[in-house]
Amino acid sequence: MGTQANTQLGKIKKRLRQQIQSRLISQGQKLPSERELSELFATTRITIKDALVSLETEGLIYREERRGWYVSPERVCYNPLSRSHFHQMMTDQSRTAETRLLNVRTEVGGGEYASALALQGLMQIHVIERVRYIDGRAVLFVENCLKAALFPDILAENLTLSLTGLYREKYGYETQRSRFEVIPTAAPAHVAKALNLAEGQPVMKICRINYKQDGELIDCEFEYWRPDAMMIQIDSEG
Amino acid sequence: MGTQANTQLGKIKKRLRQQIQSRLISQGQKLPSERELSELFATTRITIKDALVSLETEGLIYREERRGWYVSPERVCYNPLSRSHFHQMMTDQSRTAETRLLNVRTEVGGGEYASALALQGLMQIHVIERVRYIDGRAVLFVENCLKAALFPDILAENLTLSLTGLYREKYGYETQRSRFEVIPTAAPAHVAKALNLAEGQPVMKICRINYKQDGELIDCEFEYWRPDAMMIQIDSEG
DNA sequence: TAGTGGTCTAGACCACTCG
DNA sequence: GAGTGGTCTAGACCACTAT
Image (tube, rainbow over all chains, first blue to last red; front, side):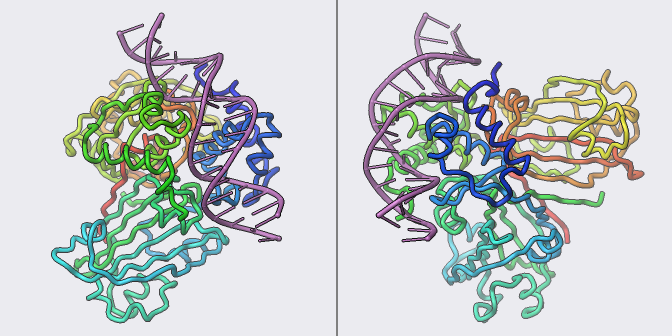
């Protein structure tokens, strides 16, 4: 038996899983504290924590840094190829979505931005940082990185709305999705802070590069999702 | 300062990251044991383990259960929409691929299989379990689940080759990809065993459902990837 | 059989959140 | 100020791998 079935860890996971899946603890609800759990299960905090981290990996629970552990709501389906906006996609799934602007800055592109935008030489870019909430929970940190020259005065607009909508209405750019990547990795510090994660916790990173109708690259986007909050779902014709 | 910058954990992570990124430890190479590392850094195994798990989440290192920690090779790019076979995709990236048949069984469909195949009533299915290796490392566990009635005598074929190729050549079925899902989750026991993971470690689960040219559903596939081994990359026209 | 990671005990202090 | 998770110490035994 190489399994955890008969270990403390396995028993604790199994028990908590039962409680969650039978809805004895409901979605979004807080679990007892690690100290309480360690008394309940007559073990140490380390063992409890190992069990919680494991359930977190399954996507059953999540944590808010120094606040506690909570039962994960159902995953939302996310289609990076879809034409519809984030808010629309969530509404279609009977979820409420909200976007907050965190920070905007203009700088000379470098590093990850420069290579994603295929910048040749020095060029100004706008970086727009936003956080998206689903049913009140911060689940997605988004960094949009725009070639400034293509978007005069965009920073004066309402940036909590759909940027692709703004591209179309204000500038006449139709975005044609071209490439995106999905990478499971750890949250960088600024992302962790925005999502109430501890540094180094897992996130799903999605990088997307958008081109307009004439084929010119206009912006790139870095999304960081809480991994328990989503699944990617793509339908393809043929 | 909410960051790890000045903690033991942060320092250990930073130091190991430097060693890896500067190629002082090369890809595929084994790290010193947790006990050795805890002496080197003058700390306990628990702290070392926390640092290693965090680097594992980043995708920088990986573990083989009870064997040790290793530096991750570069991620391969994987396109679930691509028409080309797994082996072809890897060869295109100058990687060597190998597939081994783990297990084959025929059963009456139920549970996850039944719902993925949209089975109505009881029906026999073949379940084919395989492990795929990239450059000698087991990185992908695949479960194919076929409606048995559509594939007479398929179990007598060489099942380490491309199944979609077999569908086409032996049965005249052209698969038209229709839907796939990507879900970050924890490895179930049988997957963990096949990939030398510990139970509960993170994997990328990809579920795909294949239809043939007339629209009939023919099989579904459950892939479980080591998360440090891959990134999903999709190009779309339009 | 020696060595590895996996699990586990029994504590401690710290940084941070919340009321 | 009380409570939380985050970090940390100093050990231990066990299941398994490799030889």
